[in-house]
Amino acid sequence: GFVSRSVFGITERNLIRKHTLMGMAGALSAFFGCPLGGALFALEVNSRFGIEYFEHSMEAILCGEVCLAVFRTLARLPVKYIWTLPEVAKMGESDTVEIFYGLMLGLFGAIMAWVFAKFHAAVMGVFGRYNLLDNKFAIYRALTGAVVIATAGVLVPHTMFWGEYEFQTVWALSPASTLEHIWPTTGLTGFEMDSFWTCIIVGVTKLIAISFTVAGGFRGGYIFPVFCAGAAFGRAIFFVFPSIPVQLCVLCTAAAMNVALTRTAISTTLILSFLSGEQAALSPILAASLTSLFATAYMPFIKTQVDRADIDVSLYYTFEAADDSSYSSDDEEDKQKNYEDEEPEEQKPLIV
Image (cartoon, rainbow, N blue to C red; front, side, top):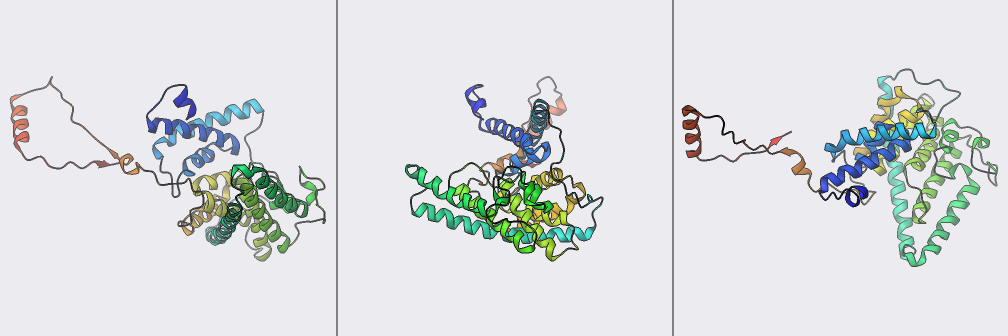
């Protein structure tokens, strides 16, 4: 969008919007490694319910595909899934009952996201009450957030960093020694994820770390950290209901929590299915995502997500009659005269 305005001098709002969405789609596609999911995420995340800037979908998806190809080529990285479950075979097919599981897990994930939203609002309220959100007190704000984040990481090392690599350890229930960027990997207490309660501890602690990361003004966000927290809660669910495939427990819960906060039901489904290599889980994950989207429809979390102001105009095409002076006949002139003499009717735009 900045390049569109500053370099090319574009002033038309919808054209600048298209260029902005194309840039977002390219970056997110390279980030996730999934061009369709990344592009749709860029389109969905601007609104609270669905894709409102739908007319820019094709350009955004094209930009995502091109950017992914260029980035992966330059970085010499393959386009493949990054998370695996060594002890469990991939789902070769999905039963219809698993869609029902997705619905239930989606509702569970939505509830957990609602609890997190309330907690985060309280944390931000405390920071605001003590003026820590004022840039004049940025050092104190960062220090407060860092104390909580570091304490959580020392006690529960699975909650460190943003979760892309930690997700593998969490959803596979691997030993803490597999954590790539942490030392000592078991923290001060020798913490391991090996039971229902330790999974709950990881999920809750990760949500606390996410909240204080954002409140403390640190770089980060919600997407992969929430995926990681959802994976921990999904693993806890698997301890209670071992008949549900572990892939569904983890992926559906992670999807539901992310959708409740970011409102990206379609893209989250595609991204999680791709990153895990579990294409057969697509339908249950979608069921979880949609359940969470509708269950939290009246829970605004990202304040910048607003309804599109020109949505009504974008739904219509206006047609104007062409003036074809090269064609004329007496019959046509008579018809035209009779038409002009008639009382004009109100023309309604065609809904496309």
